[in-house]
Amino acid sequence: MIRNICRSLVKRKPALIAIALIAVLVIPQASESQILPSPCCAILSFGLSSIAGAITNVIGSALNAINATMTTIEAFERTVVWPRDLINEAKAVVGALQGIFNQIRGLGQIRVASATLPNTQQLEQTLLSRDSGLINAVDSEYTAVYSAVPPPTDASAEVRDLIDMTDATAEAAMKRAIAIDAIADLEMQAADRIIQEVQAAAPGSAPILEAGAAAWLVRANAYTQTALTELMRVRAIDLATAGAEMKLDAQRGAKLRGNVTDTLKRN
Image (tube, rainbow, N blue to C red; front, top):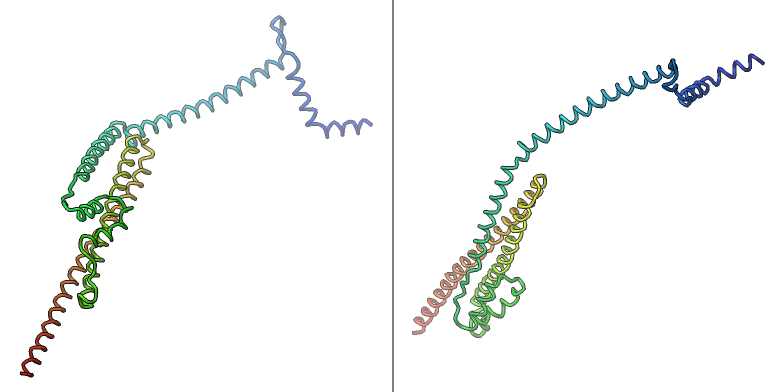
């Protein structure tokens, strides 16, 4: 029986140790009125004080090192990455650019209409409207000013083709001009919005706004290329029409010479 009890105690050794520790912690400490303090309480108090001191030293040192590092990083950001003086200077430049944009917009709104007759005034008003919704009105207004393609009884097929192609190119250029004016207005609005956001933006968001401005710059270049393409197209049609006129003159000259020759042979 004694052996069984010993074996049971050995198997339950961790539990007994835990119970002993709990008992030590639960037993009241000796009061100040006692003549001799409890040795167990003195040892426990000394151990706890040592542990607390070690924890305070380790954690305190780590926190101090972290605070010093964060202070260094913040100082670097204030003086190098996002210096306040340079940021304010950049915002002032942005405000000056806003004034320049306003002047450009004012120049673009100067009235330049000069037509004096009803039909020409209507066409000119449409061409200078900067309203893409009026593009479809160009066809009828163009015809009212420049007349329609003559019927087959009044001109040859070659002449009618030249007139029709020239009219088509001219109308397309007028419509494209209205569209480009409308695009320019949208670009100005986008530029104003970007400038307003830059003036109120935090330093960390500047790269995002810069990327947006770069995207709009690429679009503006694309629209500019579209306008240049339209000018090249108009110039190409002009040259083609001039070449066709010379070809028709040559054909007319050859036909006239043939008629003169036939007339001389009959006489």
